[in-house]
Length: 234
Image (cartoon, rainbow, N blue to C red; front, side, top):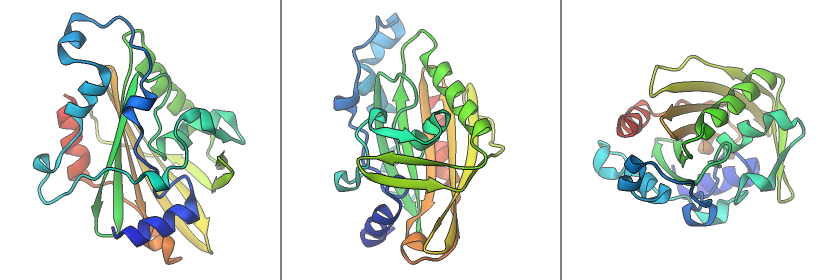
């Protein structure tokens, strides 16, 4: 996706089209006492850096860092929702970690005019990852008629949210589509979350070019990217 399209979509959508990289170092929380297996894998941030897909993992895809100038929020604490139960949906669609993550990292790839965002988050050993997924599941079930998210003076309204069936992956999988309207054009955005042990991967797809040009769109996640990333999670 061209940079101009990303920029225009970011200005139009605030939360959806072009969030910035979740700052792993800035967002990293004090680590809980790691298990022996985790200790061998390094810090949460180091683990995520190793788990994130790279160009070498994908055939013809380029994995890119998110541009800081499109950052809507640096942390979930900066985001509010008119329906608090819906907040995890906003986090998921903006590459912000769900629940109480110890570290997070985000990248994106582009296929044609559609971008697929990948956000990884590492959690402690006391069920934090499971709790994060439970919060997202509740949000999907509770926010069918839409919600509005705000951060740093910007507003992003979503018209609807609906659960979708996702292929089995990891220990737990959730998927949903959301809709929004901009300049009279309707857009379908797609999100999938996969938990593998104490790591959650959230994938988000948006057609920024269509949004920037006020053309209807229905984004689809890039299956090769999602499949490869899930494979690296184990």
